[in-house]
Image 1 (cartoon, rainbow, N blue to C red):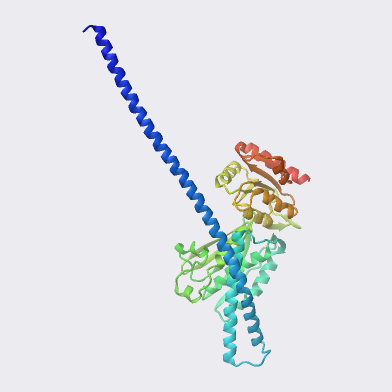
Image 2: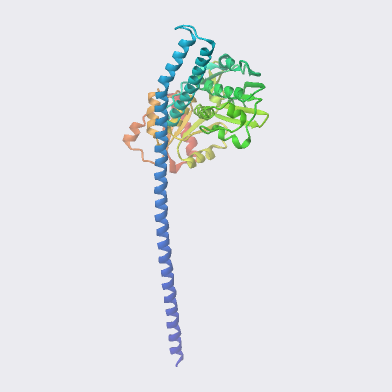
Length: 426
């Protein structure tokens, strides 16, 4: 065979091998494409299932809230009747009672009062979860609140070897919902007295470094083990000890207190050591502390409230503003929570998302207009949606529109500055 024939045969062999390699690569690519399509279908199915589960959870939460609200309302009428009738008997309006009868009626009244407390807590929890618990900020002096608390809780000390000490506290005024603060403190103090057999329960307060208010309720009671400290803030959470069994409660007071603290713009935490007592710390933000004839503490600090259900966007805003000490960033997870936080603790600028479950951003703006719009508060809408004329008309009062895809530290600071200046001039 000639050299040219040998070269042609070799080339043909190489082409055949290359063709087989291409066929193999094509088969492999088709297999990978099929696997990718199967994976994509699986991801779509998973997202669909997650959305369905989320809808089911939301529906279950709404049903629970409606059920709690309905049951609470239905219980109130007969309980009020029981307590009213017990009062008539104890006041001897229909004749005298023997000592044993009086003891029985007192037990009936105490049981009705315990049930009423449970019903009220259930109703408040249902309102919080449904976003319908209204906050009513007023201006009041902290020493006056502590004096009223001292008088209201004095009967709980009767016949017990425990002192209740309520310090005077700093001579300041607050602008927040006084009834909700008092409700939290009553829950904390009554818990402290319940689980303290000797020693004291002490309430104190001080201004902290950021200008906010810290109220501590410290007891010398049995304490709470570290593994149980999260459980006490769960609804109906109970700790199984001899003293807890003897003073069994509803398991709603502390979860409700923490929810109320968050609605007020603050927080509620505990530090405890078994056998050495517990300290509950209620923190209220600097903007509720009033000084110098009503001016807010920390007035040089600009407060930004981010209302957005997307945690990644809230994180982005925090990161963009973290090196600006003159800006304090607060967060709300949805429209209802954001509106309640604004009513309890106004912000200078609200960074508002439009698409949120439960209460959309446009509904938040409409609610602010109905409220008369908080003085000195500007709203910046941060959204990926196109702002149509109809939507812009619905968002009347919004100071600035910021496309989410264009957000940067510079654009965010400029939007905050322009909107705040516009609101101050209006």
